[in-house]
Image (tube, rainbow, N blue to C red):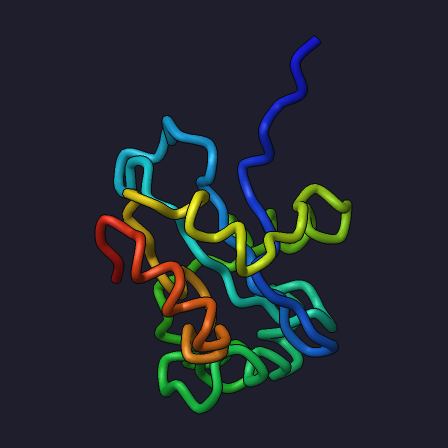
Length: 140
């Protein structure tokens, strides 16, 4: 039996944040994004829904005025109970392998990439951004 290629991978992690890319397997069913690779910057210490309720989303959203205050007056369009929560849970189930810097070119070459589908993309280390952007077909 052939093993299924993971649809996501860890690009970076430290004691505070996790950066995950999803959509690595071609042929996305998402009509809005198609086969675009999405990156997610997530707070390690709480799932995205809890992070908003407690204010811990500041670790990955900074002082963005759209994040609101503990979920009140939140104007961000990202529905964290959907994809961000699913990605966070999959990470803690061990579903995503770690990609090393040397593996990024092969993974991202010729693909469209969205930096920061959730979370502040400036938290992604610059060497990772540079490597991906240098081989991607396009990025946003």
